[in-house]
Amino acid sequence: MHDHLPPGVEIVKADEFTEWLMDIKVLDDNPLYRNEVYRLKFRFPNSYPIEAPEVVFVKDDTHPIPWHPHIYSNGIICLDLLDRQGWSPVHNVESVCVSLQSMLTGNTKKERPPGDENFVKYNTQRPKDINFLFHDNSV
Image 1 (cartoon, rainbow, N blue to C red):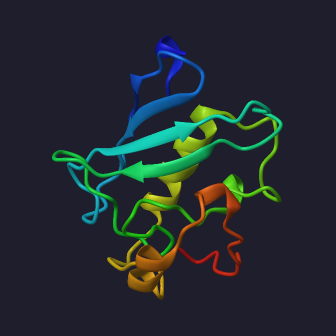
Image 2: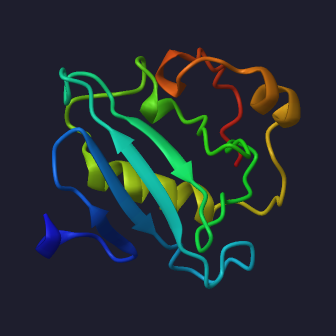
């Protein structure tokens, strides 16, 4: 996979097939994401690729959580592709990374999802167990 990654996608850690770290960059000139690198953590269930991986953005000293109306400040992503209903075994790490790049590229709003503060404060579920309502395809 190292030799065939899409532009703007880099493997940081993929030692075992349980948890991977990937870095992504938005390749266009969107001012919200210019010169930023974002880190993703993939956790693979035993049933992958039948079941979607758990994917979140990870914040550290050099990787912020991107601003987006579908990305919570704790890194949880509201994206139908990562949901049980939207996932298909034809998807993989590369297609998830490219989908997230595309989602960021098309965004023009420097905002968090409605209720971000309460969600981050009170949510106790893992991302894969959250039942998001997918209703906004405009961002």
